[in-house]
Amino acid sequence: MKFTKATNYALHTMLTLVTASPAKPIGVQQLAESQGVSPTYLSKILTKLVKAEMIESISGAHGGYRLSQKKDDITFLDIIHAIEGTASLFECNFVHGDECSIQAVMTEAEGKMQSHLRNTKLADLVQKQP
Amino acid sequence: MKFTKATNYALHTMLTLVTASPAKPIGVQQLAESQGVSPTYLSKILTKLVKAEMIESISGAHGGYRLSQKKDDITFLDIIHAIEGTASLFECNFVHGDECSIQAVMTEAEGKMQSHLRNTKLADLVQKQP
DNA sequence: CCTTCATAGACTTTACCTATCTATAATATC
DNA sequence: GATATTATAGATAGGTAAAGTCTATGAAGG
Image 1: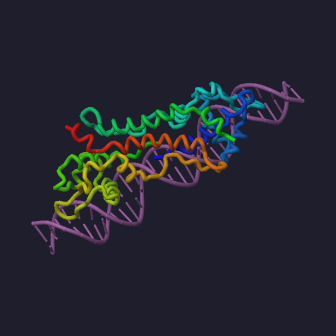
Image 2: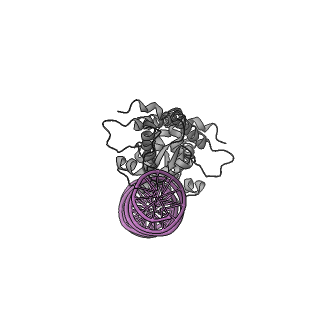
Image 3: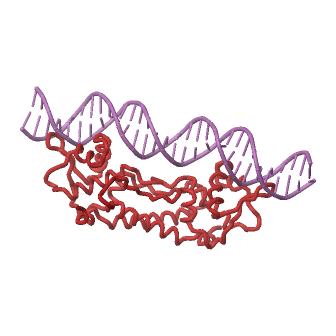
């Protein structure tokens, strides 16, 4: 039970893109190098963010990635959901009568975490970056 | 990124033990059967709870498992930590200058979830059981 | 002593994460 | 238009942890 490395890559890449000028896209090569990950693997991750319509990709020379939303709209939860999916962290698959009281507690707990991630935007961190 | 099935087994078993009379231990066979899991596998899980000193095991005929704590002391977080470990859900292993602002957000979010799990006791569910 | 029951270790199987490689398509530059 | 640059997609392979089985061992009761 851990967040995947892919989520870490995605969050750091998004923070870079939010901080950077939106005019000029940044190539995956450069993004990958700064994180010590292979470009092909990172591009797989970024493709998910593209499909979630959080960033845009520009093919061809001088292409790369840039934000497609206003940076104030992008929350941690958006990014995490794009990478990890939106399934519940806990799923009791037993056949109880109707509802599982344990499931209810776990879902509520997860909701607390999600609430914090939904209320925190990437832009909140920008001024803290060097 | 999901809670393991083992956690689900552990939580349901603990709920059974909290609900049951503490005088007579319940065998793993019976506990396993009600959850549709093999006794040997479930006993592996329960051994972790024994080592966490949440339950006791009694060997020999008419043996089994029973609570070792007062049921009001047992929180969801205790059980989860006993099974999943206490490592942080998110660990940024990059070498930033000093601290990772992303890590800080993620840790705080996890803290919100943990807080809810720490404040919810198994005993809170007992009266809701049929 | 013999049955019952938990414990431990070795082992397999499965599933997913991580990563690489290659081919393809799109775009700018010359 | 040819070429270089760059993202996308598919196949594939390795690693790791979860999930589960099997067998042997040890403790306790009758």
